[in-house]
Every structure is written in structure tokens, then in C-alpha cells.
Amino acid sequence: MINPRIKALSEAKYKQFRGWFDKRLDDAIAAAEAQEKAPQLSKVNIIQLAHIRVQSILSKFCFFYSL
Image (cartoon, rainbow, N blue to C red; front, side, top):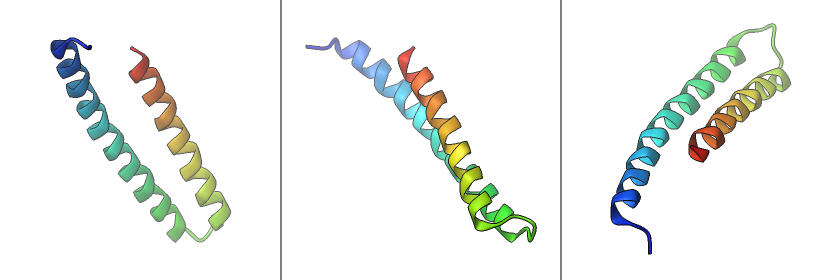
């Protein structure tokens, strides 16, 4: 059984990260929508930008969660 103190600390850290992740994801979506309005970029480019941003966020999540 996991130590309740360790579990509480892990849950707090997860909630902190989740808030950060949600904000980053919202920012990435907003940036993709803003880029969508720019006439020089195609929808394919916008999707690629959003994909790159999400991959970046996920890589940080994996690093953060491994600590």
C-alpha cells in the first residue's frame, strides 16, 4: 500500500501540473485559431503547428512526471 503522505504529495503535484497543462493547451489552441485567421497559412500548417505544440507539452509532461 502506498504511503498516504506520498500519495497526497503526488496528487498535489499532479493537480499543479494539470493546471499548467490545461493552460498551455488552451494557449496552443488559441494560437492555432489565430493562425487560422492569417491568410498566408493553410489549414495543414495550422494543424502541424498545433501538433508540434501539443507534442512539446506532452514531452514536458513526461519529463515532469518522471521526477
